[in-house]
Amino acid sequence: MAPKSSSRAPDPILLTLFANRFMSVAEAMGRSLQQTSISTNIKERLDFSCALFAPDGDLVANAPFIPIHLGSMSFAVKYQMQLYGKDLKEGDVIMTNSPHAGGSHLPDITIISPVFSPGTQDIIFFTASRGHHADIGGILPGSMPPTSVTLGEEGAEIVSFKIVSGGVFDKAGLYERMIDRPAQYPGSSGCRNIRDVESDLKAQIAANHKGVQLIHAIVDDYGLETVQEYMYHIRKNAENSVRNLLKDVAKKAGTNFLNAVDYLDDGSPIHLRIEINPDQGSAVFDFEGTGCEVRGNLNAPISVVHSAVIYCMRAMLDVDIPLNAGCLVPLDSASFPSPPRLSFPND
Image (cartoon, rainbow, N blue to C red):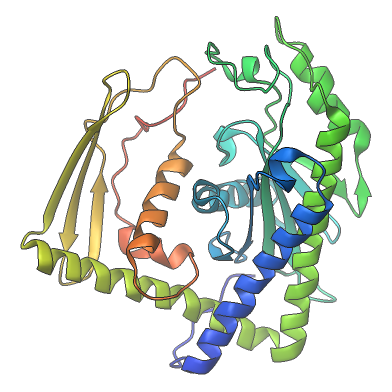
């Protein structure tokens, strides 16, 4: 079910109410995940994120977790939507960590749950959580070996796995993907702490389920049509806020062109040229001239580049709105190197 637009002006009180209700869903998911996880990474270091997505995969709302997760998780949701289409059913949960499928680095595992309209097969939202797991196999414990040049050396890469199907947890499939397959790579081991990983993944699944329950409660309170209407308004509000910001930046800078250059430790340049259209409040982010991908484990998938852009846009706003996909609408023509220079080596 596609998100619905609305020609009616939003009620400002309801706009604020729904923005906070949606954010509260992500916050409750985060509390659930922290309380039910067992690893230091998630329970104490808080290296996780939870968010709510529209049926088209666009980010609707999030709690203030790890910024680099939040902008890129939408890529993961959309990738799984393309794979499964209408084949997702009630009680299905998807697991992924591949940078080819909207992931970041392999230890960050994303769990995605569809939310169905009661009594139908129409997806009305997605809930998703991403958490850092201490070890997923590879040539060294920790799954981030500094000398790695392929993903296989870093551990288990999972493009897509239905970890829960119809409410049934696939433990055998998880162990195969986390232990057996990574161990087949020369010099590599499977996951070294599978019980901890399994427990934390179940905590992520439970957090997603908490989000599903809370979304259904909102729909029960206001009706699906109103909820979808304000889902649209919230993203439109973010879009308008970014457009106004870009107009203001161009006015204060006295130019429509902004340039920045920085360098990584090895001397590789990062070039960014921003061209602002002050009439439309839109901008082109052009990274042409940025250094090539390196043959190592410190590259940025295109989803992470988008994540950095959307977070910077949100951080510059002086209005209290949820970080969501509306922040990127004025940047639809953003020019990222294709194939992306900030990418990962082909393995």
